[in-house]
Length: 434
Image (cartoon, rainbow, N blue to C red; front, side, top):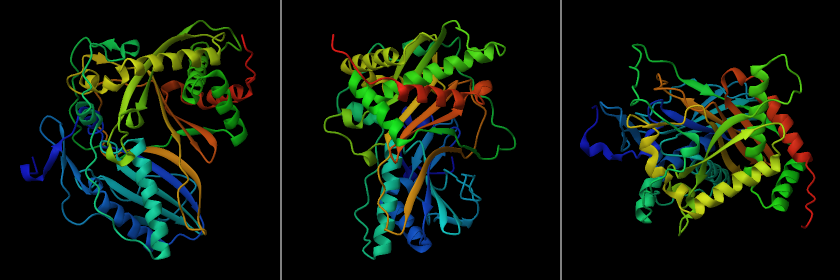
């Protein structure tokens, strides 16, 4: 090992370990319209590293590949700034390295526009934490421009969900909650050896489908009228889109046919912060999501509202029984070298909710928001994972769904998603009393 015991903060928990092998950074990228004060942004990022010292920490891997959270060493890496095309998100020109730092800021400028992307290592920042950090960055930038910026006390290191489960006395039960989406592994995972020449970093930018505010509002109202969550409705629409696409791929000559039932297994994260008492602040947790699962056979006759009701009912049951809350205690059975179950081939739906309105000076506007993923050192995997990952969020009152992966269906899925969401927004919201 290239570090000492004195460098170590703690060994990463299983909910954090699964992002170590590929050095996965989760990115939040915003398009900025207006004159950006680069000096103020550099200063704001420096303050973010000081006030959230977890971001200046490092990750080291021991001989078994286990990740260790290490204290900061040396001066932090400041914001990177370059001129370029702001219309897209591209790999930074510099190297993201978890053995150096766990958060980076990449800024691309073009006339009176800029693209600002905050990358945070997924082992220490899930969606809730990452959005809180981005909000804090823009708060600090706004204060810097106004000349009123001051550092507060450094934030304590955030903890993983396993730590909170122990603190709240949540026991491990005999079921994981993922039985509907998992299969037994015939043998323990065997990690392929690392390549002699490390693979270059890779960036995954999901292709997005975005609804207008009016259509988004109709889906929200539909969920309210039928007593289901927006997440349940959207998940149902996405399962229908995947089933339709998979059926078309199986028989490319068929058009508008009544395809046979397509069995699908869905897994989605559930943020536990607001479900614990007292609630956990966004920046107090690293990865705070339990996992929930749902399985169904999808046909053209599967109604989207009825399917959403089944999804929502299953989630309510698993939350009421405490199954989702303790699902994290089963993660070693599904991820890493001790796995005995496989989730390969499941449909992953990650709904990060409504993006807050970030505070900016009057002369700036954040006009777009994207979620991207960056693998700093991709490595061969032990086996297949999700068939596709759908990323769902709402920004500026517009529902957005990104498609990540999908294999041979990747080219067809975005259009199918668009059709299903348009159909969902067109569903009558009239609910008759029985």
